Length: 394
Image (cartoon, rainbow, N blue to C red; front, side):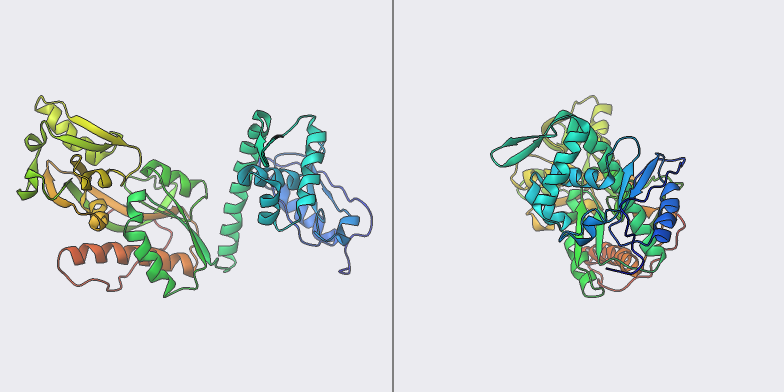
C-alpha cells in the first residue's frame, strides 16, 4: 500500500459551496491530499458532502471505493450516480462495468445499495436488459448533466496544464459528414497522433448547444453567434443555390429564380432554415404557395431524395459542395443571402496543439473544396488564428 494512505475507516469533512456540481476521483489520497481535494471540490459543489476512505476497498481487485464523495444526509455517493449513469447509457451492468473498467459484481452491488438508500426499484429486467424506471430517468438527467459539466472542466484544466488529448469532439450538421469531415480527419491524422474523433450532429442550434454544453470541443456553424459565449475562426462564405437531378428541366439553366420553382415539388428540411426560407418566401411574395413534397429533419438528408429525382432542394454553396458524391446539379438562386461559416469553441478556452491543428485542417479542407470546385489549386496550407478572440468580420 502506498505510504501515507489513510489506514482508518472513514475520514469526514463537511464544507459548503455556492454552486452546484459534482467531482469524483479514484486515485489514492493521503489525508492531507484529501482535505485539499475537498476544499477544491467545495469551490464547485453546492451541497454538503463528506469524503469516505474505505480501507477494505484499498485491497479489492476493482480498487472500488478508495475515495468516494458522499452527498451528506443522503448516503448516496457520486460513484453510485456515476455507475447508475453508465448503466442507463449502456443498457446493461456488463457494458457499464466494461466502460468503467470495473467488474460486473461491483456495478450490481452499487446499484443495489443505491436502490436500498432510495427505497425504489431503479430498473426493470427484460430479456437481459435493464429498463430504467421514471424515477431513474429523473435522477439520470440530473447526474448526467453534472458529469458532462465535470468532463468539460477536466478538458479545460488539462488544456491549461499543457496536456493535449488524443481524442477530440466535433459538432456539425450531418451534411458535412458527406465530404468535409472525412477529408479533415484524414488530413489531421497525417499531422497529429489522433486516436479518435467523436462527432455530434443536428441543426445549427443543436451544434451550438453541443459546444456550449461541452459535448464537443469544436463546432462548425455560421454566424451570428454570441461573442460573449464563443470564440471563432472564419471558414468561408456561401450564397443560395438550388439542387436538381441532372435530368430536370431546370438543370439547363444558369440561374434559378423564384418564378422557376412555382409548381415544382420541393424537398425541404423542416422550413426554419434560412436558405430554404429564402426561396419559399420569394414564391410566397409572388402569390404562389410552395409545394413541399418531402420534408426531412436532418440537414443533408434531402440530397438523396433530389438524387432520386423526387424534387428540388434549396441550400447554399458551402453545404451543397458536400453533395458531390451524389449525381446532382447545383445552380445559383436569386434572391440570395450571404452566409458566414466559422469553426467555433467555448469563449476563453485554451486550445492545445491538437485542437489548433483541427481548426486549421477544417479551414484548409473547406477552402480547398471551394478552390477545387472553382478550378483553382487546392490543398495549400492556410494561416489560422486560434487565439481566444471572436472574429466578427469575415
